[in-house]
Length: 299
Image (cartoon, rainbow, N blue to C red; front, side, top):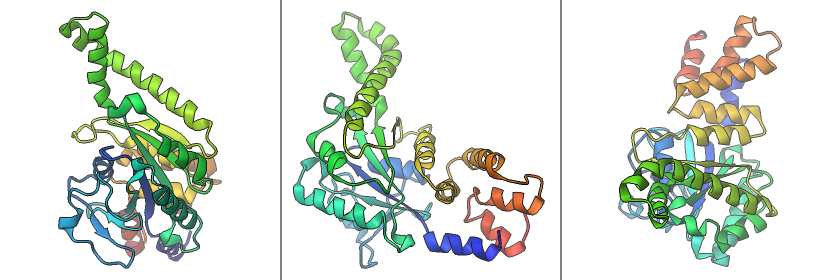
């Protein structure tokens, strides 16, 4: 592939754009911070391209007071642009209409730099007794997401440890016994909840592409790789898969894994040096590796 064509490809798409949907306190901001490898709040730009006052931004993200058209960008990784729904759990018809309009326009727009590439639908496991509410069913039945993959994200899965302890105590275990058994019990609870959610949503008109659980996103060991994998695998176009993998910067192993997997399955001549280099570069962190290649013409 000619360097000019590669530059043109990334210039046309620009960023990997994600709509994040979910209830208040679903841990959405924490997930975005983990994906972008930062603890800072994002910079927010409105539809006019004007930056929103950071004082207004702080404390509003999880309560959903901003506009769905706003762009959330973390300075640590500006390759991702996020949009966040607002007032979702309230079940407001006006808010659902706004979301449906946004998805319909942004999933098919000819302005490639404005197109959304994936939707992350967050359901917190802190509310495990009401995993699917009416507003969420309305979304999956009424919002046409045929052109953009939806990944259901079961957030705060580690909260099920406390629920497991309570259940074990109710079953007659001592506190010490409950704590000892809580890990395995929580895993079983999550498995059942995930199966129940998938079964319910698969019956909807526009079911999600996949479902993944995340835990401890506010901890250093929190692992967002399952979400990145699900998102990548849900994309139909290899170029979009390259875009999300090359944009993520939390795990270089993902870049190498997808580069090798796709190259081995699609490359006609894996021993052609130039072709192999370009194929590998397509999956690498583009801000660093591709820029170096454009400047120096070699690895």
